[in-house]
Length: 107
Picture 1 (cartoon, rainbow, N blue to C red):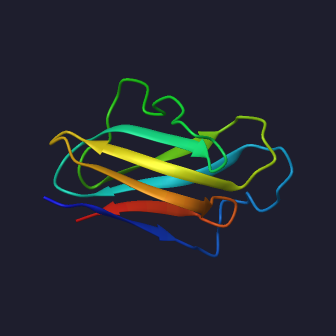
Picture 2 (picture 1 turned 120 degrees about the horizontal axis):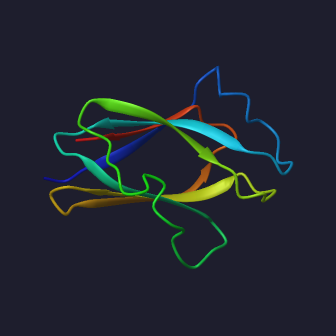
């Protein structure tokens, strides 16, 4: 099954609104039929994926979880990758996470 991702701009962007070096917080939503087993976020300027933010856990179907990026960088623009229990993966590039309040994986 093919998945897609939907980045949603919300009015309550979890207060991560400046490009200063501060922690970024946003919500991941899994609206697919499969568990999200890996979630990677990397600065858009990077050529590789950072570690799995789910740290050995998973995000079940129809669940959501808050994510904190505390990398000390001054960028807001990141790439996102999600891998699911059925082996499918989704990648999305150049997202301004300072402006996003949530990010949904949908079928």
